[in-house]
Length: 425
Image (tube, rainbow, N blue to C red; front, side):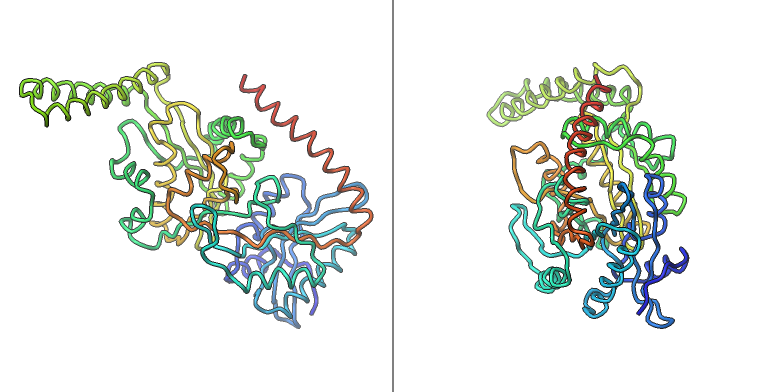
């Protein structure tokens, strides 16, 4: 078998036909990565004239050397261990010939399915065996990481099947989430598929989320490149949830007036039953009045409250990047946004919506617990991937450079978070 650089069209044809395909192993994702300074390698493993496996490698220069990353793993039949060994061996040779320190991969392969408490409810022995196979073939397994910052891509995700009827999809959701959708989208909230003009507003919502959750935020240019490149390949959409404040205020006035009128009628017929209903209405009125007062703080006619940029490929839609404004969260705009994307995915013939990322430890005191809670309440499968593997080609040099890079990364991360916070101030 021989590893060769191959043309993009041949590469993409193979990826699209594979049952292990992933948008991060397409030439389009290579274009996105190229805009960030990576050199892209489209590689194919041939057995004679037959293409057996492919790998999109992202090369990053570091001094006189390079690192190589194969996001979400190369594309191959992972049950064919002889093929995997040959692919690994050939990639090692290729990386060594091109002055590589290592190549990294994190295959889209599920190890465990978890319950809401993060406990294993379904385990895949073949996936566990695959981890051992990788280690036997020279991989350094990064381990069973649980935090976002501990791996290149999230090791946990929520995936929702949208193949069933809308009623079945709703049944799987948490009762509180289901109630949000049963009541319908509030007057004045609109969810729509946007365009490149909406990327700036999307970035603003991301900025508030990054500050609130203490996350690193990519610059606006990255998101613009991400959206425009993938959208040109029909592989991405931008969704926006917008609030028309005037319409919402009017609907609140109507609700409060209707409740007050009903309360006046009940006061004319006092009894135990009406007293209970009046008490309930007083609570509703108090809640509506508090929310109305918050609405009064915003004089803009329209505000974008939530936004998401997706990736689409084959049978999946990934909700990769999303942000929410801190204000008016009682309108549940983010819930209606995600549900709208799910229903669009269903109509367009996709089978699965991947919420792309959660931490593996359910910690209610964590700044990121809200992300887990929000995603979990949509009723999807809580999946754990097998993790990240490094194949070290030059151990000594890699250790020295890696030590320096970790120090540098920590400094840059602190600086980036501080800049985002200062920009908002």
